[in-house]
Structures are given as C-alpha cells and as structure tokens.
Image (tube, rainbow, N blue to C red; front, side):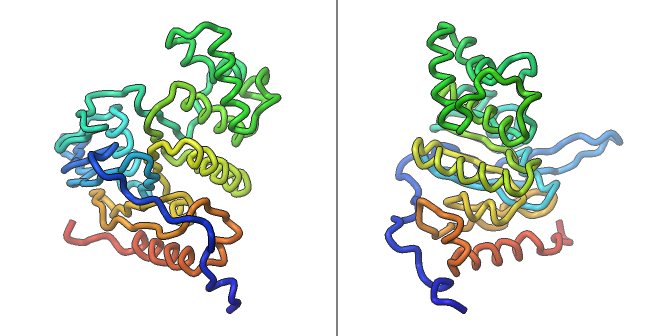
Length: 279
C-alpha cells in the first residue's frame, strides 16, 4: 500500500467541533406513530435524542424505511411528533418557519417561471421589490454556478441544474438551517459528486446548520461533521459517529486517506446489521 494512502491531510485545519451553548436543533425523546388502515398503529420513530450545534453539518444515515425523512419533516414542522420535543434555537417547533429551509429530492420548481423567477419568488412574496428580489436572486444563481441561465425555464435544465435552482431558491430567504432530504439521490453519479462538492463550498462560506438525510455512506462521510446512524424500523439512533477528517475536504485526497476508508467501512457495517429481532 502506498505512503499516500496512509498519509494524513496536512495543512487543512481541524474538523468542526460542537459549539458551546444551546443547540441550533434539539431533539429529545422524539417518537412518531402512524395509524394503519387496519386500525392498528405503526411505530416509525422510537425515542430519538440528537442535538445539532450551530454551523454543524450532520447527516442522518440509515436503510430505506427507517424513518430518516420522517424525522427531517418533524424538524421542519411539516409533521408533528407523537411524543418528545423538537426545538430550534431553544424554541419549540410548532410548524414550518423561515428559519428552516427544506431542499427535497423532488425539485418542485414552478414550470411557468424562469430560473430567475423561481429563485426570486420567495423574496417577492416576502415584500421585496422586483428589482431588489431579482438582484438578490441573480447573486445566488451565480453562486450555484448557473450564471447565464437566468432566463431558462425548468424544462430546459438537467436534473442537476434544477437541484441547484432549488438550493438557490431556499438560500434566497436566508434560513439558519438547511434541511436536505436526499437532495442528490435522483441524480447520476457524476452530477451527484459535482453537487456534493458545490454544497460543501457553499457551506464553507456560510456555515449554515445542515441536517442532511442520505442512505449513501460515502456521501455522509464526505460531507459531515457527524453521522447519526439509524436502525431499521422502528427508527432509533444506533450511534452518532464523529467524522475526524479536516476541512476543507478534497475528494481526490480523501480517497487515499485511511481515516476516510475506515469511516466508510465502519458505517457500512453499522447499517448492514440485521434487524433487531426483539424490536
């Protein structure tokens, strides 16, 4: 094995550490039960305890159907928990709010609006003049790498471009938190890697708090400060793993780093464990 494979990433700084004080996102004893058509109940989430510090990038990783997205929707205020409490900056979550910006796998763009119109929409709804909203939207479009596409309609864009428009639209109203539900899951591998790199560039610049749902182990390791690993249903947090890789991160260097490889191997083993027969 080459020396490069075992060499540390020198001169890249230290991984992020939790911020002292109250968490940006707090989850305490969160459970969610759904009613079944036969009149019974289904326990989707069981006693979730997780804090996310300001500016931290935390991924929720687990097999399909473990309740990852449900947990994200509860934090976003779109779904009410059956038990427990969720707070943002110490305040209870009672519904959606502009402090939390969702980015979903489905782009949900307005097909009758241009790229500029989609990104400016929330700003216009918030009371900004057309001129100011479009100026702000133009800055964000450039930041996500779509300068020159302002007058294009969604049907003329690739999947990756549509997702960048969706991210710019969410960033436009300045949320403190990004809630991302497998935003790159429907994209081809090459586009997914490009958008992961771009997301990290945006995060390094703004250091927003990010809660990121994924079932891809390599994606979670590449992006995150910590990874919360969930069990199969009912969804429980099996372990929270700190990703001790320095930032900024560069994929070509990480692929040769033993720490990256070890995290990927360990996390894959965690999510491949057989379901708990006692559950």
